[in-house]
Length: 111
Length: 113
Image (cartoon, rainbow over all chains, first blue to last red; front, side):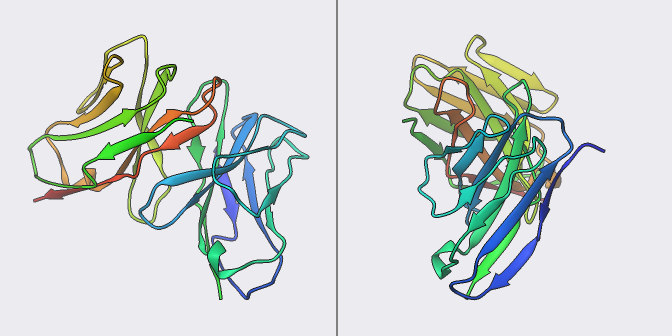
């Protein structure tokens, strides 16, 4: 079944550690996105990609980086995690239409 | 950039009654307006969207209306049921291709049995 997958689903890590949040999709979509969402709050776009080798920054400034080497894969990396990075990170993708489909999210806690 | 305001932030409705959530946007060039529903602990899911060439769109108990002149759009849920309890987000595009969405702050809807 076509879906969007995120791993890990939960992550507790110490300050200063490097982390990579994985996102993969079997939707066959070209466009992919990363959002940051505090519980019950609005979603903020931090990165997006039109396709392979394309990455753009969103409206919310973020210390994270992304890469898009394969169409189905869009990982997000934090070189040095801080408590201010504690949040939920949602990956999404879209095809020819505008509808964005979301993954289940990764809840990150930085101690 | 696009600015989206959403009201109310919380809404409690008796089961069977109607619920209305309103959003305003700032960019008159915006032409695509989705609504997402997010249940507790779940991912956001699109429930309905509308494009600027129509004023209203319905899907069973859910409808969205758009007033381009006033730059606002509203979500209407009729005959509410307990499973409608969730946080609802509106959004508007922040770029020409509609990839960059600006989301509203969300409305927590509670259906009272």
